[in-house]
Length: 251
Image 1 (cartoon, rainbow, N blue to C red):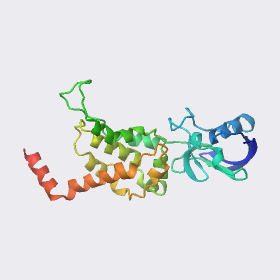
Image 2: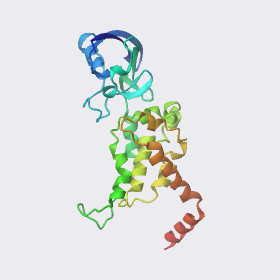
Image 3: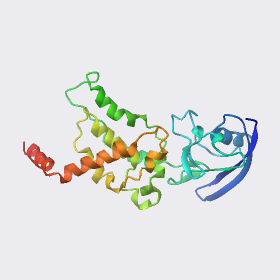
Image 4: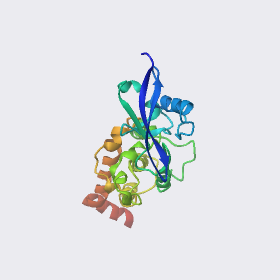
């Protein structure tokens, strides 16, 4: 493919406000959107703020919205757009803008601290943990998360309702609860109930928008959130489970 000049529209501004600015930037074969943003910095806007690190789709730093869809800048090839198409790059909408394409994602770290950590059996020492391969396979998918926060950004529970943020952890951290709840060596009790009562699992109405934008193709809804909802419902409404809990507690 011969080099061509692409029309690029980038959001510029800070906490006080801003807007979209139009640029024309050269594109070469095989380049991704992050390459074009870097060329824009080098040739026209040296003060453009953008967060990035690995450029390999594994750090999650360069999350943004491209033509309205949450994506990684480093994994979105310019060849997916027509040469006459305007490519619009904006910051993640759900989180407060700091400057240009950089947003304040501290909300996610606050929610991470609310999740109780892995709690192994007290009689096991590091190096003595043993798991069946099928147990490893169940939660290995969730360990692929690169914390790009695209799922958090696209989730309409927090995206469209600021008032929900205090009570809702978002799909990334509900998935973390599910991962630990599936772990055969985790002794922390009632993770499903905590996900429901403290992390806002009930707010999720399984639209699967989080799964659709995940760059690691994790089936967040089908393999984490729905099973977690089922376990939470069993704990609360299944009479056999309820009776078992009563007997166990009495014992």
